[in-house]
Length: 404
Image 1 (cartoon, rainbow, N blue to C red):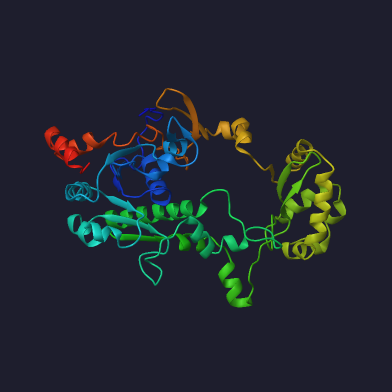
Image 2 (spheres, rainbow, N blue to C red):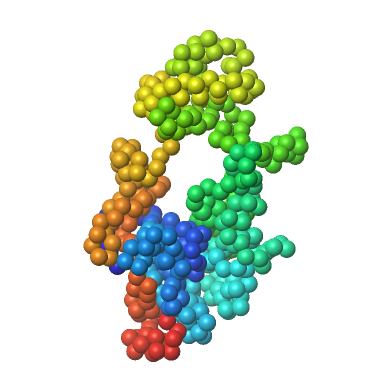
């Protein structure tokens, strides 16, 4: 394990104890956020390989580079959840915890003897964050569901892509990440209730499809009132004009968002169409959207006649929001990314420097930070069990029995 203490100020979640029973993305991402801001996160992993994320995507010296980020600041404890002594360990941990995070299929923890009734009985103040494909109730609750399914059922995939092609996905598991963010918000709200209103603990139930559905803007009332079904519209912002991606003379892609009334006028002046800047029928969004095709053809022509550098420089001068479509290579060289410390340098286990994403949000007085990168499997088993009262001989016996 490579320790890289980058922060010395107190963290806002210091003193909070979290037990993570999740694997892969949604549950572990939620726990990662809490760990970045000071919570003690004890990640329970199976002794025979641990979280599958350890082997996902690009591996360095046999370990996923994603793992080093997703598990930063967490303590890895190996526990066999099929062994009664392993279940006993988890129960002892939960008895002292503030939050348990799990993303098993509903019913799995109950079969293991770790359901809500059991755990809340041990710890009435416990907050249990449960992330699943379809939630803990309803006719689909028992079905397996991943982020891709949540994105599809929640409406995101239907509106993503171009009208003449099948729906497409974003290049990341956005459904899992959205669910994790909602989960963190819910868990912190539950803690606020417990601490301020004298309330007991409670379950925070996050369904992946509902987490995505909650982000779908005006989709529901537009259908209910007008029967309007939003379709795929490519790179434009539907109903909000102009906001689109355009191709430059040198084959680069630039996103331009000029849908504010004053910004639209500045864009028209910048591209030499002052006559349109002050056209009465283009003074508001409704008028511009009615002439959407005409405006986009005009902007396409202007952008296509210039290089990316020329387009960005002219629009920056005119104070029109615009950006190249960043690749990760662009990010590594960008002054804004660097000024905001969005690329942290940590050390991998062999001592090699490695850039990882910086931590957000940025708190002015109690920022988050990286204390260590994702640990080796079971790196904290002995120390965590020792803190629970297990003697070294007990730990050796548990290991011999296959419980850890």
